[in-house]
Image (cartoon, rainbow, N blue to C red; front, side, top):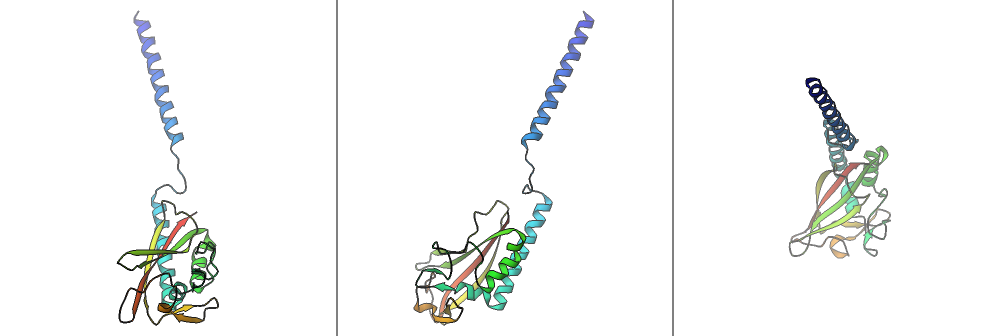
Length: 194
């Protein structure tokens, strides 16, 4: 009788061990570890991408390429020159700013969107998509730069020559200021790994 109880306890321990081992194996199989899983290396990559986006925006701003791209507007088509019928670029924008972004991200397999945020009449906020490459992942980083436009700034034609003053055209951002101030455009670059 004592031997039967010992065998029962041994069998019970083996079954419990198998159940525990099966639970651990099952838990490991349902936990997905992907290249996009949170980790310190992933955070490091996001920090690098944010620094790269800030550098690209700074370089474009200092060279004047950022303002030129903001003003690269086809007033008769109500979209950027050469953009899709939706009004934004899905590939490289044919400006110096577009080339900077493509060298910084496109050649490295990193996706990016560029949005322009501005004030609207009545104190609201408007948004114009300049470049749209898809829906950002959860690891996307955002970097912004502000550009102030005046009434004397000129729309750029398709060949990048100066056209009409910004306040005399059908520009996407309205004139919300007085005394020569036109509007402030916040350029937002969203970057993520594909």
